[in-house]
Image (cartoon, rainbow, N blue to C red):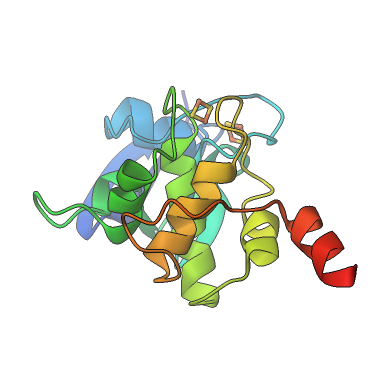
Length: 175
Ligand code: FES
Ligand code: FES
């Protein structure tokens, strides 16, 4: 079996492995490094459950080979909390009930973190567009949007204000 040596930084820690050239990055993370917070929800690159950061960019880790990540800086959901202190997005998903089964949540949080890196105070429409590559079969997205609004300082932790769908807001504004 031909293998290739890879060396990457994962959540600030240098990790190395000998991998088959066909191994996907998501499998390197889950099966070799045992970082199972990154999920696999499809085999069509559609669901976003496997979203991580590669060199600061949001990436679906099922769409990359492990060997393509050689030398890269990787951040996964396990690297978000600071010890026992949740990342503001993790806290906001908790506060706003932004999950039900939780399967999509790690990928959703990683995508939201990247979105907020690009745009500190995204509008609701920008949030919905920003997470459009991440599917959630449970929540209807409303509380996920609220969580991202909370993490961006646009919604208080106890704010139960109803978040209208972007289309509804736009329709109201136009009327
Ligand atoms: Fe579904 Fe990667 S596992 S997009
Ligand atoms: Fe179940 Fe999103 S909370 S898929």
